[in-house]
Image (tube, each protein chain N blue to C red):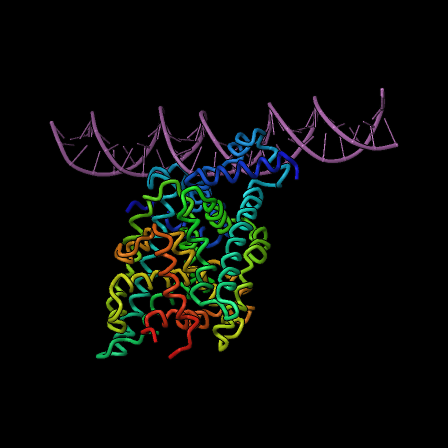
Length: 208
Length: 208
DNA sequence: GACGGTAGTCGAACGGTGTTCGAACCTGTG
DNA sequence: CACAGGTTCGAACACCGTTCGACTACCGTC
């Protein structure tokens, strides 16, 4: 990859972590940090939006790698039995929660990215990322082992729900705190993960 | 309220429903539709952002009214017993889901609003709406009647989770469809609501 | 070794944005 | 009538993302 393009992605990632609002990310600032000019953003990526997508893609890969590593180590720990339901859920939503609270992490790249995706003029740009990068489907067989009475679609739907809860936590912390009466410490990643596991696990248990 | 201000809110609401992306909402377009000039936006509301907040506030009130009405009629139907768990959940998340799929509804105002809130420069502007307008707390006593083994914070946390799932449905339909193997018809409001009730209800049932 | 094409870089310019500001206006009150 | 206040408007400002043409550096080919 062209060194200037790489430097632009680096600068974009760095800037996305520092700023409070995506509005503060401008092509001129990114170019300045990367030591080049705003026109090179359009030249290398087509648009500023696609530069952010490229930056987010890189971060997504690391996040998914962490998810897979957690899943695999849980599987190895439990072998030859299937991994515990709680561990699978924690592998699925844990990294996002942990990253979103870790001060130096690259999570802001992802949260700014998703908020940009929502207001995009052409959602087609994001199709590949949504369908490809977030390959949550890896989790489906593990869940099926523990809940064989659910078909693949029902498992997928529950994974979607778990991710929705995860998003709610990483996105609207204030509302969560108010609703939970400030009885949950939403700055403690492990506590939050445990609470999510608490509500998600029953979705995969047999109705009594 | 000043007639020009009212016309601006009307125009803003109307425009938010028509456009595909919030980027297409400009002070000049709003002013044009309202038959005035862009500077009156700043004059009456302080900023374009606050105009959108005012428009969203009006729509939120209607949505919450519908929620309450559903809740009350469920309570009346079941009286003197407490309303069914499924009905409470449907009253909580049903209106959002239904509005988000209804063609002529005002739901786009809310979805554009939340996507704007996430990228805002100063989140303080939204504090009052998040804490006040969405008074989901009304639902807490009803849930407590059916799940007395959960304390108020645990109920609130589960309400948050239900809302997170709701958001996931109204926001990222494509991802849901892919994950659910296209086996769920996400354009059928009643089907979607039933599926949400399916996964949320177990959160309020006693662990077996 | 000279040459032509190509990729990369840059600065200027364009059309657009939200907001500010001062001048005009209109209305109701003393 | 005079004056004060709230309201409206258009011009101007600073900034935005993107486009475009000129200039440079390189690299394979005659």
